[in-house]
Length: 174
Image (cartoon, rainbow, N blue to C red):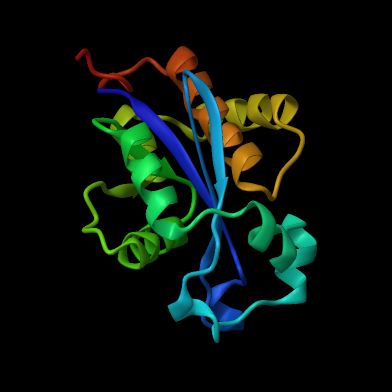
């Protein structure tokens, strides 16, 4: 079993209204994979903010032309993360993952955990985390898209694996 970092972009932040996932990406040792998500029919009347669109630079037209149906994205995503621990840097990612599963008509068969749980498990100190954060910042310049954000988290976790005297391995042998 290994790790995979996940990140979502959404139509808006929940404080601005009812949001839905518009992009998801994962990153692991094999690299980054990302998918734009065509809004599900149930989401048509949900909120979309200009602020979010400016931040992630994804338009409704992008979703219409390049997005894939939630059921397709969820199926491919589940195959890609099968058997791995899924970590995110925001609790909101678990909510958008569940919403994507619901739109796909599928049960949630994986758990999205906050990366902070892992940091506690391995005993990462504030100094370790700061060192890993600076490493990720240097190697992952673009942000606010799901792919670069998942890569940033993966870089941080991979760096921690190298610098923390690990009590519990980040990756368990299969």
